[in-house]
Image (cartoon, rainbow, N blue to C red; front, side):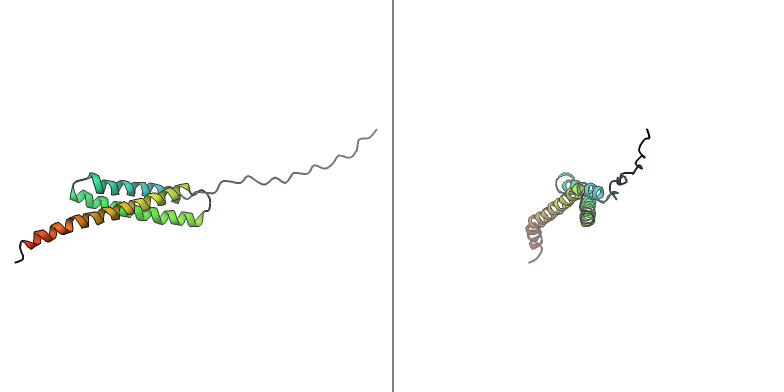
Length: 124
């Protein structure tokens, strides 16, 4: 009795392992800068009473908010998936800009009438 010819072994066509997409860190950068921007703006608005430190916090908050917005929009335009941190960074960056604008407008509205009364004393 003879055995039938063995069927040649055929490798199944299994795709090679697919590595996850490489993260470039733009989404994390957006999130961290958005968080720092909101922290600086809130400290500028309500916490720190010293004028030199307030100016530094204002500039840092503005810088961090711009970085958060730019990097968040770049990440969203390049990658369709894994956008959670980028969206969170955008929300934090826009929130920081809104708080900054509202607090600056409030400062101008409150102080403008005070300055006019002060200067009226010196003008005949």
